[in-house]
Length: 389
Ligand code: GAL
Image (cartoon, helix red, strand yellow):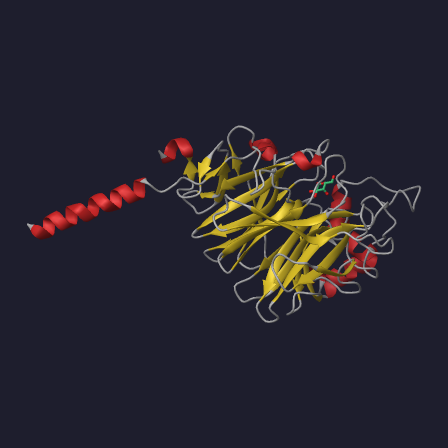
């Protein structure tokens, strides 16, 4: 009898304590105040979990321009809901000669931790001041502490003079040799042919723009970083005028590229890549290329980081699915057994007011990821608040 009473008491205690778990609400599209009551300013960003603390790095956006006037901000949190402003992790420079001089375009920063060196490594998309989006460079910075200060190392195009994995072999070489890099380039050839024809697609597929940029290195714009289970890190970026994604291996210290890289989805026009691994399958969610305006997300899967990558349907379901509910992917955070899809709702007329769209990734009966919009959801249950009650 005494045992039964103890068990009942235990059950009551457990039930009450479960019922008392504070909801941790994520509200896409709203103002997300930091510890100072100010909307988090970390756009196009990514997260790093280090020693039990989440660090959120992103573009500091000011009120009037999307150019970098401050640099990369860092916030920290233990619960993904309460964020402490840790200040500027990577500051733009006042030296006019610096690649990252104030007024440059510095976008989509991501930070990874290198176990071997004990350093925090940041890569980002860099456009040189006053040159629009023509530089298409990757920049790298390093720090001893997660909150910085990060020291800028260099910027440049990627993997100059190196053939990608997907264009190796006799047959690919013969097609590559036959490519005429001026054929579709209106700036270099008044008789240039139209883009988006089947022939053009075939030429892009065979490496037309990769060949054009071969000596100087591949273009690198929207990007993410991914550290695999074996500790190898990859830089995934929009290349070839945003037509083709590149997946490029980083060196052991994560500070440079090894020269091993692969082109993914040539002429697919993907931006904003975000990636996660679940049960041995790599999933990538991207956007199309419509600048700050939202478009339909795309999704791919592969059994290895090196592919083959298969395209799936738009992962978004329900109202707003065709514009990713107003957002553009930036990062996917593993969270226990779950994954959080993170996106930006851009406000180009008032850049600092851009909002965040975080949603739980759900899986269908075949294990294929999908997203549904939720006004408010609880990080404890990964369910919309109405359902969680
Ligand atoms: C988006 C891109 C952003 C930014 C913007 C500029 O497509 O994802 O990071 O570069 O274009 O128009």
